[in-house]
Image (cartoon, rainbow, N blue to C red; front, side, top):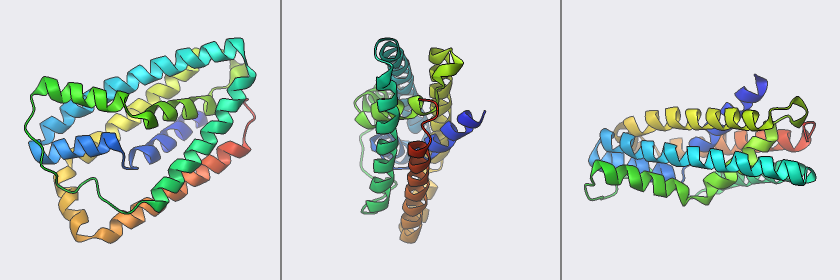
Amino acid sequence: MNNGISVAAISLGVVVTPGPNMMYMVSRSIAQGRRAGVVSLGGVAVGALVFVVVTNLGLMSVLRTVPVLYTFFKIVGAVYLAWLAWQALRSDGASVFAPREMADTSTRRLFAMGLVTNLLNPKIALLYLSLIPQFVDTRAGHVLLQGFVFGGIQVAVSVCANLVIITAAGALSEFLAARPAWLRAQRYVTGSALGALALLLAMDQSQA
């Protein structure tokens, strides 16, 4: 249970850190309406599920052939989360909620573009390779099942958080345009939280 809560907390921190997926979905929502943002989110979610399956099957193969590499993934994962924290803290403050001109696109194309945007985002692949090994207890057995549960939690948190963001994108765009200090505060809070989690994970390698 504690591991599930930790996965959800890290996932939420990563979701609110601006990236290509959020930029695409928010832009669609502002330019073409909330429905376009939600459809785009559907494509992004399917792409995330693809990453969950591929990552878990790959990690299972690694565990069976070279178990020591699992510890390596855990250490590299903590380092990657620390890098995400640094990126959040050093951001130039550009807002993903800034209005951008985008041509109207059909529902099928919106979904496909969301899917491709996610599949071509290396940050997402690294996220799953970093996140899942941190919490899978190899001594408890059912490693593949654990991986799918934690991956599912990440996808669920991401979808719920992004759904709130894109449905409120228009209002947030106006709010943040008038209050740039909120962007800085968000970066500091997110970066500090991710940094603290990275430190805790680096110090706790008990499940390796």
